Amino acid sequence: MSIKRKLKSLLIENDINTSLRRIGDQVASKLKCDSRGSCIHFAELFIQEVEKINPDLLNHFNVIEGYVSELDYPQEHTWIELPNGDTIDPTIAQFGKDHEGHTDRIVYRGTGMDYLTNYMAHDDTYEKERENFPTKYFK
Image 1 (cartoon, rainbow, N blue to C red):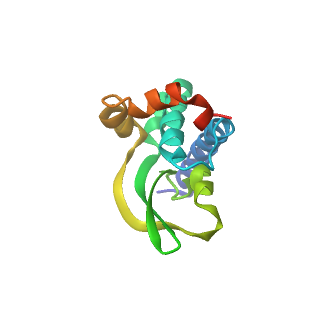
Image 2 (image 1 turned 90 degrees about the horizontal axis):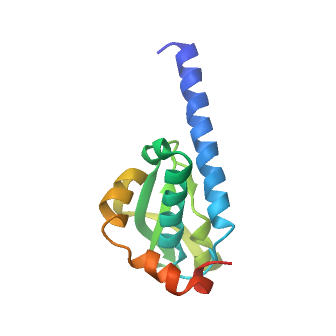
């Protein structure tokens, strides 16, 4: 691959990462990201916002369901992984200061499109929960 092509590829990837981060910031600003269980709500709302703004971006990030170590005890957690390996994870705040970060134990990894079509399209549990208890999740 030529230097010019590599540079163009890096610029495109950077633009995608920046766009996804902006969407993540926008969604996070509306949520109580430090409440337990907020991670799945963030992921779903993030996917819906990406779909609304630019559906092509749904194939440029992964939804990860895995674990965070908190005081040596694994806690289920969901976060977004960008193409460069960075994460969008405002809901890590729900674990406080004593968490050790994401573990290597991953239960699910799939694109935003996969998650939208295989999970969200068939299970509206969390959407109904947000509708029924909006003050629990939204600022």
